[in-house]
Image (cartoon, rainbow, N blue to C red):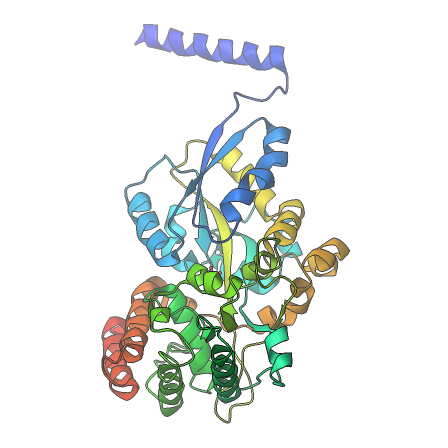
Length: 427
Ligand code: GLC
């Protein structure tokens, strides 16, 4: 007993001596592990993005890449976090995950008290669960209708304002171009795979037809309604006509692949596809523009699903101080600007929408401020820890409908029963 007390005293004397003699010199450099899914050039850009932080702190960071699908990432993250792994220090998290993963992350409220007010309040709020700031926003997302200016002009067509106009224009241009030998051209590509991305697309169809938000902010299950049926019936009509049958397996990158090789008139995708579409290796460089997504039926307003990504520090990390420093850097103005210019990601820091360098490099960014400010959130806040189940039931009902497995009316009726069961006595 006495011996171990002496040893402890000796250790602390040595530690005090080390501190005194080296002053504020950095403690041994840390090697951090940052896990993230990625689309486009995100993995490639990450090294350049974190370099200034690595140089300033002497720490290093390794990105552990995940599958592109946010659904697959979520499943893996949940396993890691449930096991309390200390192998991962930081997690890049989707905007919808905060309520479900909150318990596993460090509260960043205090450390970000000066940075957080420079971000859009609604985004900070989306990452706040019971007063705890569980992740810091690094970019936000709201989709666009990408359209080929050259093809619309050649065929005398206007940018569609309604889904009905989009259907007609896509069909007309597809037919005419195919008759001229462009056999691979499709009218419209989007994300129809059975995953979270289909929830985003389908929420836009339903909401833009006036059919609500699946589960309303007050917790009411609203999805089983005529407008929603009308929306899904419209989309069912696209599969195999203006959209390839394969669209039912597409995620973001598959849609972008068809688009960027010049084989689509229209595409629904997030802003990351804007910069890449104007890249030197893109067949559509300079040939396209973006517009808000169309409206449906007699409903006057269109809908864009709110997306976005954040960075969270794992409670199980043994290098929390360095991890928090990296999170602050990635959510800060320097990294957000770099990401905006190089990945055409929408910043979450208000002042960056007036940044001349960003506007010059990626004109979509200042133009998209209002689109994302009006974007529709998925029902992750009202359904709390049950969101993933709700979303997976929703995308399955939609995927079944689009694959001809039951009608929209039948599948939405069944969905209502399933969601009521998941809700039980309350979300
Ligand atoms: C984008 C969005 C994200 C969404 C995902 C769906 O990455 O930012 O919020 O969940 O697409 O595929």
